[in-house]
Length: 349
Image 1 (cartoon, rainbow, N blue to C red):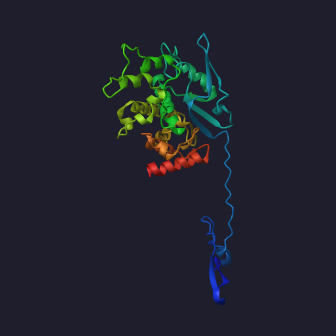
Image 2 (image 1 turned 90 degrees about the vertical axis):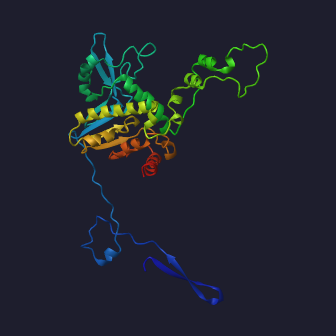
Image 3 (image 1 turned 180 degrees about the vertical axis):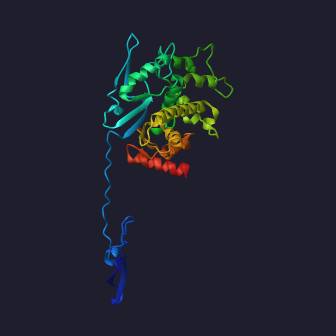
């Protein structure tokens, strides 16, 4: 056969031994190629033809809906109550293009993070009575704001995204901190700094020695990352087993649903939806149910961990299914894409 050949070697005693040499099988006929007009010789030895992909040309009539956690806009408010806006040129999404782009996101204004009060911001986001003015101010920029309650968005952004997702995506399962920025807190909770009321030496600690209450100790020293660390998550049938993690996941889901409501209102048939960041990983799940004809793209601007790290999340399956509901998922490196595929195989089967 053309794929095998024989080589004769001289063995012991002058006898010739045959050594069989195995080659590669011939290339199969391309699936899209037609062999009706080919000769038998060309059908047996087909010549591979390079596949030519048609270039995609987008013009000004093509629409694109870009969704991100924040709009690439800087807002200003004068003392007279007049709002003005300008592009935030430090943000990549503020780049101009010839396409018809509609940007959807949250407006960064005083108190957007929900930290309002004595030690926080004096404002609680854009006032409700002035939201129409801000919408009119953002209209020339083709930006549509998503009005989320600051406290809800703070739980989603600072609690779930920064406290839960960000460490896991960067291959950190839990971060323990002793709050080094607050030295007074250390002295108050350090047992070595407690006043000694005995005149004789204190005996070494034993099982009968009274210790500090663990609940009091953890509540005073635990930092934000320690509070949201995955080692404290009880695995159960419900997300986070109904504890603090369930409230954070509920906030993450509610914000993604509000983004979906705004995108559906801005969507025109034929538009592309481009989602950015790990803040909106389950947004494709909401969009495919309401606008199934939409072409959705998702780009992750952070690393993606291995399956051993990602499986520590209690909401891992919902996050993966949300990403899989996109038509295309983009990563920075092939390594991150390989981790994502491995997680889908091992965690979703």
